[in-house]
Image 1 (cartoon, rainbow, N blue to C red):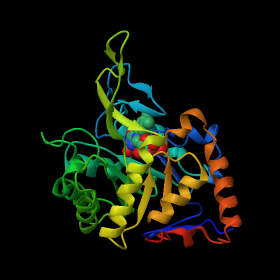
Image 2 (image 1 turned 60 degrees about the horizontal axis):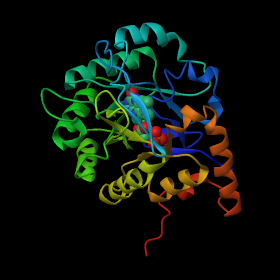
Image 3 (image 1 turned 90 degrees about the horizontal axis):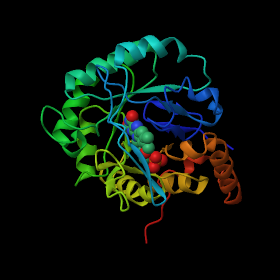
Length: 302
Ligand SMILES: Cc1cc2nc3c(=O)[nH]c(=O)nc-3n(C[C@H](O)[C@H](O)[C@H](O)COP(=O)(O)O)c2cc1C
């Protein structure tokens, strides 16, 4: 079974990616999980300076999904590079960095630091609050493009943009970041959500609203993949949202994604990629598919 897929300039041995924020720095994750089942692992997002994140509670179950408002707690790029830079090579899987910031220059600084630390690609988390007083960057095609342009000028590694399902026109944002030089897009980050404990009358997150992830996100993120695949043919896509089984990966690939990032399932099942890989291979064999890449965009319109 040929599991390899092409993602713009990159060739992955597997379509499975470890989603940012769910696999730690990657170096620590591989101590418990199996790296050989991933095409790449994306480390937790890093900012130009250290961020404390939000006060607790900042993770809560909500239905069959999960709410979080971690607030990108991270040590800042310099401390991150000093702690993990020397541990990224030789862990059996390519590591991609994730940059976050509030200005295009800040993103570029982090991206340079990640590249110097040895990551093989830089993912731009455009779903963080506030860029110079504006809202979520990924809601705005031109703000998003400004970040990608600044980073593109600063690094030689492949650059991807992680977009938000909260955008009113995600296809416009995707086209804009592609024009600005993004090598692929990641669809998607979490959707805004909230929950209340009615006995204590307190929000389940200290911030009231946070990011909703897990299985209920899948139809929403899949809709984003389908829209972008139709609006920006040729722009490679990593699908992300609610992946739990091999069949979910098949669905994302058919919708037009070239790879599929696995997130929330890691918290209940850190070794999920091995099972998902087995289910994917079994599905392909039973459907006469010898190359996983043949599934990309294979959806048949009515
Ligand atoms: C606890 C938690 C922390 C996350 N942290 C990040 C992060 O630092 N950077 C980022 O780009 N996405 C982050 N995400 C979003 C995930 O990478 C992923 O896009 C999202 O959870 C949807 O996929 P899933 O439903 O498989 O979890 C985080 C998600 C969770 C649940």
